[in-house]
Length: 236
Image (cartoon, rainbow, N blue to C red; front, side):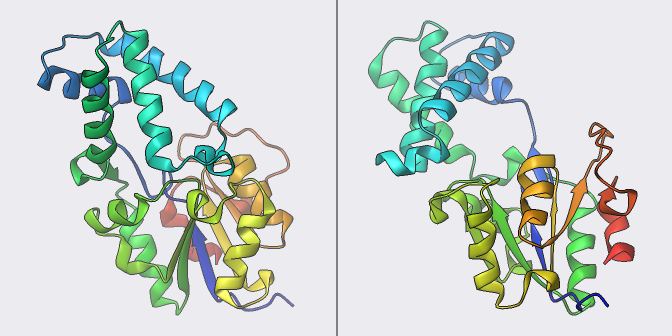
């Protein structure tokens, strides 16, 4: 007999909300404010390269190497614009500072239409909610301005935890906060490895959110797959 469910843990980015415009567009918009006219396509490509480089060299915001989320992201922004021939150090610092803070603003994020209703329906079932996210320390502010923070009893970010999904250790930290066995906890996320496999590896009931039917994984049973958060309540 399955243990009664007590908690639902959530991934955030691309599960409950997403970046409203492309990174290239948002970076170019900020560049225009300081008099630069850049191609969004070029900036997007430069960002992806800078992001991959920093993620590989300084995983999880470089926490284990003495960095933090702010320093890490400002480095990504500086490298992005440097690839686009912006060389003035003061300009690069201004852009990186402004963009780091810009992403705390609600206008840069879009909450999925099914997110709030799903969180409310979980609460109506008497379930407590928490967050486990590979995100930096801005997450609390972002959830607040997007009107979602009040739904959660706790947030665990990979910057705060010092370890990132798919490590089971970050889910172990979450289970300690929940104070119940893994069999009484579910986790919802859009990433096959980081969310679905990682949560299930510690005994949590993982559900894979696949809004665009892109995960063709035969090891994910139909009952573990969600095409919309509207399907969640009937699965819990």
